[in-house]
Image 1: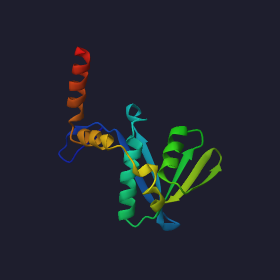
Image 2: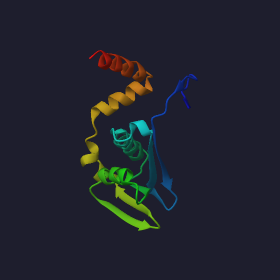
Image 3: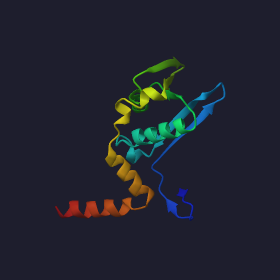
Image 4: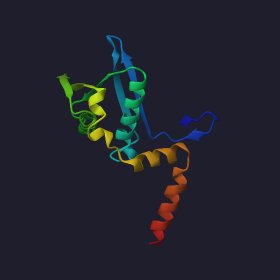
Length: 141
């Protein structure tokens, strides 16, 4: 359970983080996690786009991700982040690395604005109200 600054409980739907690599201060390893109900809806792409913005603001120029080689959804997300991706597989783990600049102009940059609207509603704890209204409307139809 997540708690906001005022101590109110909130439902977590996703998390993206990066950590600067010890061997190269301009490179960071990143990870993205989404709640099961939100997977396949653009949440990972939205989180990654925000992660890229934050990494650039902190002087990061390359991103690296380690993904299980059989995790097709995570691999697809990483592949959509860049048109210039280098990857190596070792023991069932695929490690991919790319320049952030290549992520800014491709498919990844075209994240659906509706996902941002949903994330904003969720952050403001208004999403439940909207979903309830939508479900009521759908039940009447």
